[in-house]
Image (tube, rainbow, N blue to C red):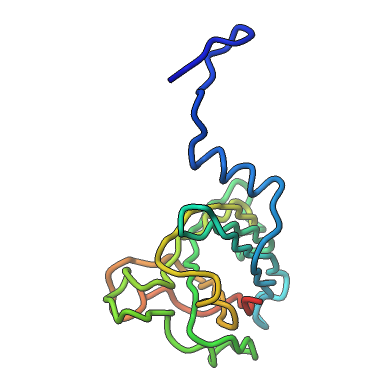
Length: 170
């Protein structure tokens, strides 16, 4: 149902998107992961935030700086982003285990398979909603950024290449 107020048509009902926008703008994350780059990508940094929602799901927001395509003007590249089983970001990030997959699903249906980052000249921002995990289930695990995009078919992990960024979810 819409209302005409002050020369604008406004929705009378509140949608999940409106609640998500308010959560991102005014809410405090329930968990977050500070991302740092590997030895070949020391400029890579950022934060991935996790918010509880009233819809039994999690709102995820990521802001990443210093992705490898930073030097190429007007460049865009995709980077895979996943939640991994273990929260050990010791370089070269090889102690993070596999994708978080508590129900033993094939890729890309792991609970830890997330939306790809689209880096524009080294910067990426995204937000999405996910019901495949809860915040208590992921605290202590890691968020990994891979050098390449996820192909969404190769088993077991999407052939996304080197782990270039890591952050422990706290």
